[in-house]
Image (cartoon, rainbow, N blue to C red; front, side, top):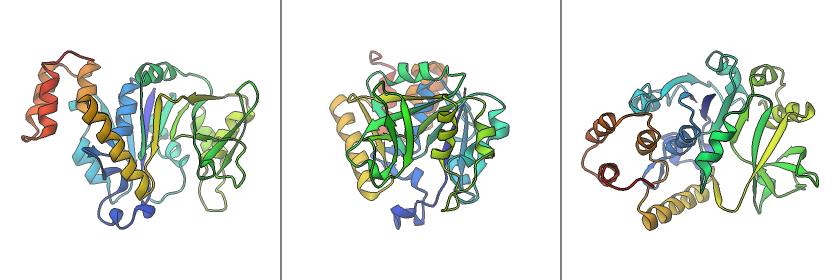
Amino acid sequence: MKGIILAGGSGSRLSPLTKVICKQLLPIYDKPLIYYPLSVLMLSGIRDILMITTPKDLDAFKELFKDGRHLGLNISYAIQEKPKGIPEAFIIGEKFIDGKPVCLILGDNIFYGEGIPAYLKEISSLQNGACLFGYYVKDPERYGVAELDKQGKVRSIEEKPKQPKSNYAITGLYYYDKQVVEFAKSLQPSKRGELEITDLNAIYLQKEQLRLEILGRGVAWLDTGTHESLHDASKFVEVIESRQGLKIACIEEIAYLMKYINQEQFVSLIEDYPQSQYRAYLQSILTRECV
């Protein structure tokens, strides 16, 4: 399965923070926001990754991740000239996808919880249809919302409804089969001039090929689109890391523990860091019992 991180957009809701740096490179406690969605793909077992960003921010992402080989990944890049909607990522990435199933994650989404790696690996074997993730929220009117029947199957999906039919928001993590490029190309722009992910999901729903997995109470989903949610995400990560002494979304650690790189390569990564708490944490991985 291929993986796409959509890290475009103007980040206007976070202005003036985003006047000089894109949203996905803002810090979430001790690392850039983009590390968190990248870690989700890595934990899914996905190593062939396309990052889609703006012309302005492309060089910064290339400087940060290069071609990904140091992490045992294959990272390539593409440009979204203007924010024309999430489904455009599949059109931009058609050549990269190359007729394979694909996972798309939004560059400002954070997922954390017990059992997520095993769960994501299972979903990554998807070959037919689409799989979305629902998360119970108190303010569903801010999101795409899934209406469920008594058996838990999706009846409809509405984008930011004034009167939500449930409290289950659709998260920014999507798994699709090889039909996704064809379906994305068939979409027409909405009134706001964008291709809508809700319309893409509606095609799968009409074909009875849409699956919704509900993320339970043991999983945290954080959407960092506002100043408040950005701050909350940083505090969340700080509390978990301070309490456990283990880092969330440490991409070097993930690459090493999942055997994407060997010990010699991991040591080389450590040596590239200056003396810092982050370097000290990476060094501790070599001596501690794996958890």
